[in-house]
Image (cartoon, rainbow, N blue to C red; front, side, top):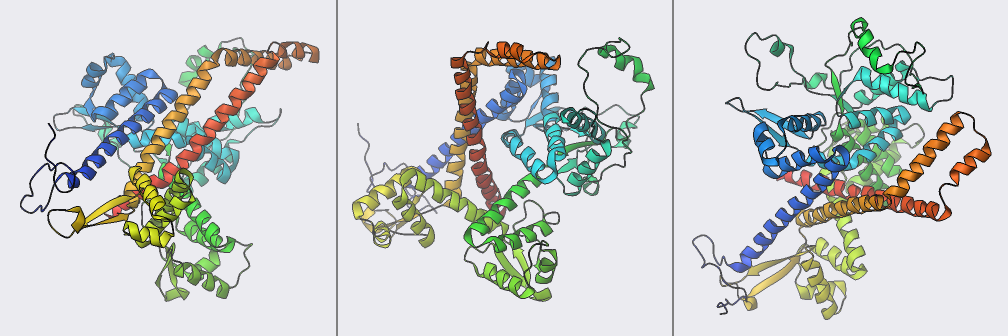
Length: 574
């Protein structure tokens, strides 16, 4: 039997209550839709976290990590019971996750230790290639390998990083050349000075010397002043090449050597001082790059260089989550401009005035002292970048006419359907179809303004508006699903061609070993012919497809970063 309907055409769920005039089904529907979107968004994140954990650490760590993401904080034995995993395996998995900052622990009043997964930190693994590439761009190959080692190992001492990186760089050099430890140490110090690497929290000495029973879990502390303080190490030496044989000149196996010489080793000078990559600082750099690029596209190269100088001057003094940079005077900016930019102080002031008067308000004026004090409005800049991303998606998905309507609604804030038709100069039927298409995809929303408490359609204004925060969340959810699909497709492509890839690797290994022993060209040619022409073509296709998928992952992650930064910045201001 059909339920009686109210005047709005929706089934009335409740009668208007005190303090809630006209609260019915039409008011509940957006809330239910928002809750449904939130729950599916969480599912998309969980699926992506599962794929990332499995790809980086294997099935057992993935099972424990996803269980913690789904259930929240839990003690050790409950995790083992719920996942059906042995206690020893759970402990090892938790050690891996804690080492990589993917799980944190807390000691409760009764001495129970509970472990909690950091979903947002797991998702940062998507960005590892971008972090490494940024370090390479700023600090060459040495910086790249330092950041790569810290990301791959989670936490490491400076001495261990320096030795490992020096060895890896020596491997790539010509025979007779080696990488000096001092050179790697200098790059590490520069990374710490610019806050791209930071110290990990440690167990204070007083806790170790306490005569009482040991606590169920150590309490880690860090002094903010010491976070970027590099220990004074006198690392003298050069990188070593790996030996091709398993034994050294004395005939002693490698596995036995550490045991034989363990007692004679000197204590590590920085033992207990561990370092990790500072991901927030990398995110700050990505944000600054996005702002500079946006200014260059909107104005010109000189304007973008002025903004870059302002961001560079305040990158250490401004926290990564601050809505504004520290105020900078015109004189300070002029003195800090790059050497190649020979612009006069008067021209600089004109550019700063132009930037401050721009409708996007990336740069704002905060005072008149020192020739004028200027700040960069980071929150508004992120809002403009997020809005530009939404506009681009609308244009690609629905076409230029829809993008015109979307920009119009953004500009005017609230518009009725008739106003949209008039302002956009689009026929009524087409405008209606486009509006409903974007409404169904959650890019725009409909706001009801009733004249009377009964919400009668004839006495209600229906205004189209763009809720940027809501649209950004919806697009972020879709990006998570896209990345998960790309990873699954890449894994499928690799699995389908597993036999061929293994054969190719075996052939490459044989050729490399024969080249090392000085084999003739004819012998090498014969080995290469083990892979037939159709197989070689199949390998090329696979390589091309995997490269496309990898590039797509990085591009989608750039969109994810922009949207996440905007949502985080907006939530902190509310």
